[in-house]
Length: 203
Image 1 (cartoon, rainbow, N blue to C red):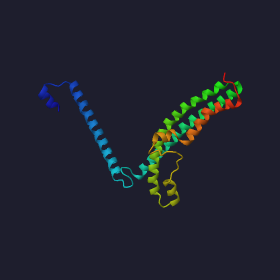
Image 2: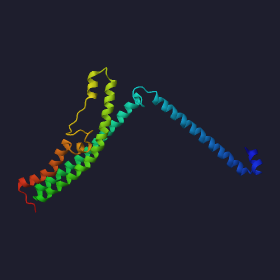
Image 3: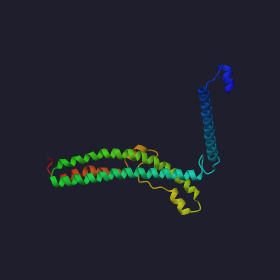
Image 4: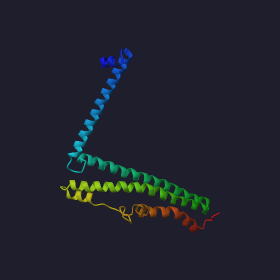
């Protein structure tokens, strides 16, 4: 390489030799790294391709995927429970303020809970995506445990308290969830009804 450089460009200085050597060493390292990555990727694709339990994934990967989806469901539920816990605390504060101050106008503040209904609706839209994916994985899991009929039946069946099907009406199903409708109607309008029932002046 150095002789070729001398023949083509004349005398080569020590600095040029060092730069050339460094460039070659760096290129060689990059080539080795690229080859290792290609080899590792090929091995992974071969392992995935040789799987017979599910398209593209082996049993361990399917179980890991189920765990991830189930964790996402529980995490989303935790977000929604936090929202309702916060609303319950504010709701109790509004009722206390009405009883202590005897001002019905405070009850109108509960109408802000209708905005929280929309806030929770957004979380529920994500939740239903995770739930539907988890249900598909549970159907697969039910087929893997045929030796235990009772457990297989539990995984194969599901419980839904929705008025509308999440698959056919995803938006309406999330917005008109029975527990959500009942909760937000109660916390939004019951302070107003309480103020009217107690005869509390509005001003």
